[in-house]
Image 1 (cartoon, one colour):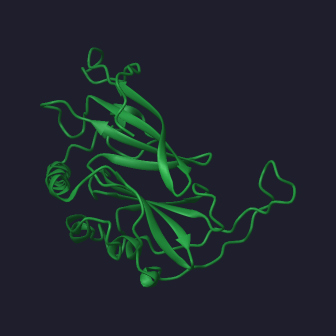
Image 2 (cartoon, one colour; image 1 turned 135 degrees about the horizontal axis):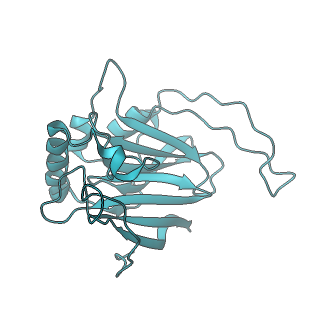
Length: 229
């Protein structure tokens, strides 16, 4: 499904994604974000007590390209605590962030080097339960033994990943009349850490073809004017 986390097979990934619950969550979050502010925001500290536990993982061998540079151990954090205690996260998203089953939350967490911090940075993606449509991407940087929110993209159908030190944010684009499972295209924006904030480095817009098969198929990229950085 276009609108799900990256890595699927385009429209085939969306076969089960057009549930009424997913559409309702999409509309609700768009409405909530329009009043609370959307897009990328920098800075803003989360409370130090928001990390439930940090357990050092076993260090890997040295980082490629540097014989004397050891790979950093990833500290496991509680992503739910980060989101719930973060003043930069919208109140509606916090209220709607509930377990899908038992204590399993619709949250993906990635660790990696984005800001050249002494500790791995944390990327948290919040999604809907039924169809895994992204609702927000948040990046946290450890500073003085606390995690600081350094990036927010709180919007429907957004998902962030780490790619060789870059933050890659994918945002599904909907034309009028598009069902939630079948957007018309996507924006793929690359951010890099510069100084003390993320800045936009690259942008690609993909438009999906609807002219083959069942009228829903992948198409070629068609760049137009990039969004403001």
